[in-house]
Image 1 (cartoon, rainbow, N blue to C red):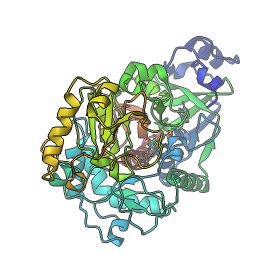
Image 2 (cartoon, protein in one colour):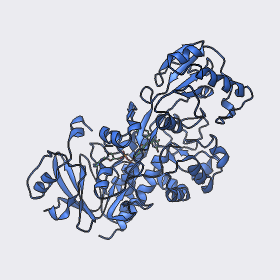
Image 3 (cartoon, helix red, strand yellow):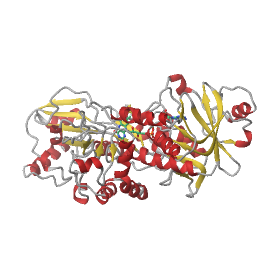
Image 4 (tube, rainbow, N blue to C red):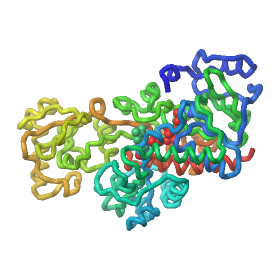
Length: 511
Ligand SMILES: Cc1cc2nc3c(=O)[nH]c(=O)nc-3n(C[C@H](O)[C@H](O)[C@H](O)COP(=O)(O)OP(=O)(O)OC[C@H]3O[C@@H](n4cnc5c(N)ncnc54)[C@H](O)[C@@H]3O)c2cc1C
């Protein structure tokens, strides 16, 4: 999105009414999120059965399923290019319970183990019904994705972190970290299109968009939905869309699917709903993630849980050698096992440590090459000097390292049960202190809260009632992923799977 687009205020209700009466308008005063009564619409410019707003993974999967259910479908995209954050992403989809790829690689997994992991590692916000459905259908969902042409290699990646080669299956979350490894039998569930580099999302979206085109799904870019149109009984029957500053009126005979992504690029919303994330220098998402879908849903009466939640990714490894170091907070104390998944490390720093943390390494565990993700605070032979450089409380860091080393001699980590493979005393000088703080380090953030929906994508109000004609999916909703973000691929898994369900439901809605 260009800066000019960014600053465009939403069309005001007064101007909308004027436009509905036939005048051409440019928005003047913002009245974000208001719905427009259908009685004010004089003339529909276009109509379809199912109208999908947003062309990321959630929107395109919704569109494909709705079309396959035999109805007319149009997708409107605010930006000049389709694909959203989904196309920028690593393309990892979290899938398990015995997918074809897991089986081909001899991996033993079950629906129960996958579900148990999600429950054990997620926060209390986890929607257990969504988790259950997702785990039960996960293998079939992966078949659907692959069956539509997304290509996966039959290679397994042994390392920690996203494979950058052609491998397509890896441990993408904290399945091997304690206590998850004792609660649920670990299995690798990160399914990533086998393209070298971080091109999985591009490959995923290129393929899904081709499928949409082959199904004669209308795709209009430069079309930013601004307001939902409501009947007097609350049913959503259309959308006001801004095209080159002019409102157009799209009628949706069966339903509207909100799939506009989250709000990581809307600074005001971030400050209002998720101020912890706002400190990050790296808002990760598509430029179109301005919160439009969430705001339109709220204006129609939807509940919007977990808006403060997001992922904060602190990718301290690879290289794996740094996991032998210790991560400490602003008091110089450890607060997690360093082999935790990146999303868990970032989450703890962001939400539990006021955004401040450091990684202490000795000569052997330090980054071998110059890197600029985590600035060096100091590198000295003395822990005391290190602590002073970071302004840590006197003696705290020395105490932390002494305690850690005492147990590390025996291969143990009584506080957090770090994987013994990474435990050894920190002795080789110099020590180096890296800044992992949210506002200094490379800590990408992305919003995860959004509209409340059923497993079938119906948007619910605070009383748990469905708003007729309104559906949503992906990061416009509060779906499977929450804080902590426990595995790469959960977001795209949720977007693609629940996007499909939302599209099917919208197609089934009576015209
Ligand atoms: C670099 C990066 C890597 C990532 N890697 C992974 C990964 O490997 N696995 C994973 O699970 N997650 C990953 N994520 C997160 C994941 O990409 C997103 O959570 C997911 O793609 C969201 O999909 P979506 O369909 O909800 O939204 P999007 O893909 O963002 O699509 C929303 C679309 O709606 C459009 N839009 C917005 N407002 C309007 C409007 N008013 N009218 C019309 N259109 C509108 C937007 O322009 C956008 O095209 C990554 C994110 C980033 C940025």
